[in-house]
Image 1: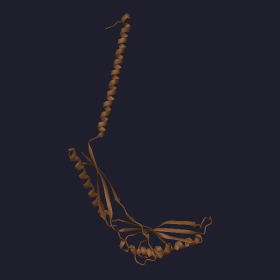
Image 2: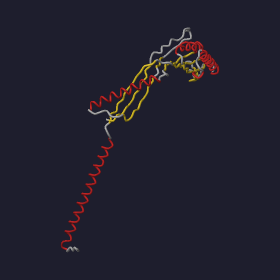
Image 3: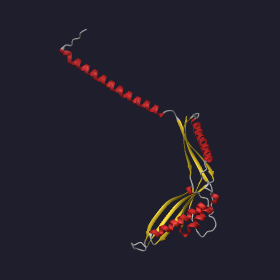
Image 4: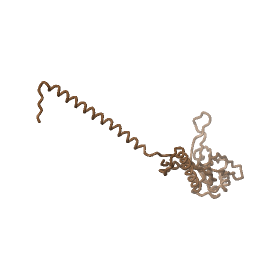
Length: 251
């Protein structure tokens, strides 16, 4: 059916049609805006996922150190670099030989430092001599013999001997770590169960587990004198092995 519009009514019809188009465009735009907001909210809810309970449990056990790390060396002064270095080398050779004779393996003795420096007197810029320091690290795996080993090394180095540090390590910690891990998991489960009861919800399955082990050596400053004839007393004491476990449960 053909529709004809007379000139008198053409402007009014065009105005009505334009208004209808504007209303339609506004309606579509508003619909798109509401749809985007709803979609964003849905994604936010979905990304949050199911409820979870995350706890950290700690397990700590105590053991007796079985290894001693000895950091020592020699320090000498000479009129020249050559003479000072020769004296230092000879002293280190004697120290190393003494340790080897007392049962320390060659693979457990390692050179750890060398320093050569000029010595000055007063404000003079001309060296009056030179100093040489050589250091080594020895791993002593028999604590019952460690005292006599240290004493022998100090005597061999004579008055040039320096002892920088001694630390005790717990190397045989496999069984201790296993116990600490079990205690940490038990601690984490107990904490998670407490949260679940407080929330009035059953504790779900384990989603993930991560752990961190810590075994800290016991350091103590030591000084030794060549004048002592008796072995250096060694007290191993105790050392803690700690494990921290983070467990995520479904709730």
